[in-house]
Amino acid sequence: MSELKRTALYDVHVAMGARMVPFAGWEMPVQYPTGPMAEHHAVRNAAGLFDIDHMGQLKLVGPDAEAFLQYVQPRDVSQMKVWDAEYSYLCYEDGTFVDDIFIYRLPDDEWMIVVNAANREKDLFWLDTHMVGFDADLIDISDPTYMLALQGPKAQAILQKLTDYDLDQVAFHTAARIQVGGVDTLIGATGYTGEYGYEFFFPEEKAIAMWEMLLDAGKEDGLLACGLAARDSLRFEACLPLYGHEIHAEVEPIGARLGWVCDWDKGPWIGRNAVLKTKLEKPKMLLVGLEMVDRGVPREHYEVAKDGKVIGWVTTGMKSPTLNKFLALAYVPRGYNKFGTELEVIIRGKPKKAVVVKRPFYIPAYRRK
Amino acid sequence: MSLKYDPNLKYAKSDEWARVEDDNIVVVGISDYAQDALSDIVYVELPEVGTQVSAGEVVGAVESVKAAADIMSPVSGEIVEVNEELNDSPEILNEDPYGAWIFKVKASDLSELDALMTAEEYEAYNATREH
Image 1 (cartoon, rainbow over the protein chains, first blue to last red):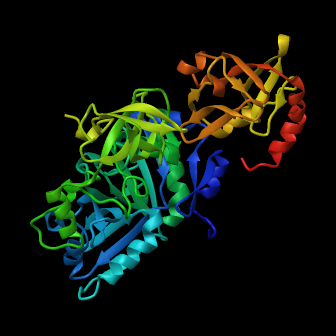
Image 2 (image 1 turned 60 degrees about the vertical axis):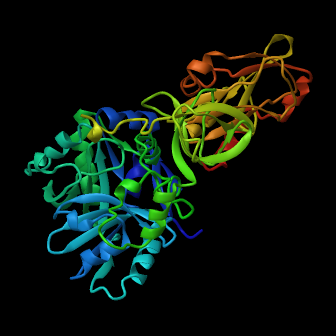
């Protein structure tokens, strides 16, 4: 393995007592001394601040930028207005995942694609090879662009202390270019925790100033710096898929329950016919939620069995901090996906009873009435 | 935040501590180093009372938010008691690692404990590990 990359906040994390771990080629904080449980609850009840600069940003410009995006991913981006931000993914021709992405439509025919850290070079290569015939340019702006996430019910109140911009104007899944404590920042009302919040894009040289400014502004509101462990448990409870776990090049969107992203009448896109075939013929493997009946912690890669016969695998599993239950996401064959289906998770060689339950485990704040 | 070492305990390389009580009973728990490395503990798989175990055998597991760690018995013998409190409150292993024991084993050969480290040796050993 090549040398791990460090974000501009590395020394700040270490000084805060964070435990640093390798993640997708980066050395990132997995937790601070507060611990993953406290960090998780802070985001659900108050707010959390995450260094997510390992994520990549690609800028897409040019007269054919929109046409190119229509061709490489399943969402109808012609329906996106300027400042809209939406979830999508890239597929191979056979319908399996290249990556999942966030698309931002910016003014002046500019787009930004946010990609997973592990896939930055892969996505760039994949997209570039499909650029032939399109008058557009794809530029990797990951290095000069710093990315942070502020998430939780208090996120808006905290950010509002640092900007004159009326944040009520920034609706969920839209973006705005604002001043945050004097720093020119693109914010998206986006995130990956199941809570309302923001993701920030701004010049890397402002990383430490921005981090400290936000932590300071949120101190009285219970804002905590949060590591990757809390980020994982938060997105897991909301059943937001994570690349390398629920989605990768061996699984496809319909089984991963992401068919809702596809716009079937917008014209061709890479992988469309394969995904369409799976939609019409039904997927072989489906992502389900499992709740343990027997005691035990289901974990990634554990086998899922029915009456002793292995039929699937766990993609993510843990004790849910919010629900206080042992839960898992798992791929099982179609037919075993009905709520109430009794299955087993093989934990350290022993089958432990589990039952198929409704997803998401935790209903995201933005999906509540 | 420095880690605690109890001079009255013996320590295994696999981070269990052992304390000898009357009648060849050995009480076993996990060290402060272990609970700190695991962080928030959410589940403990306890051995069954009456099980015959040999020294170094995996008898259970401690699971945190991010990892699972096997628990081994430092001595051979019979499991005579388990700490049922851990079923409902596994976090006491984080809060009080040297007070919260996991299981008790009636040792068939107490000299097996000679293979363990003293608190001082264990502290020196941990200094060589990457935390």
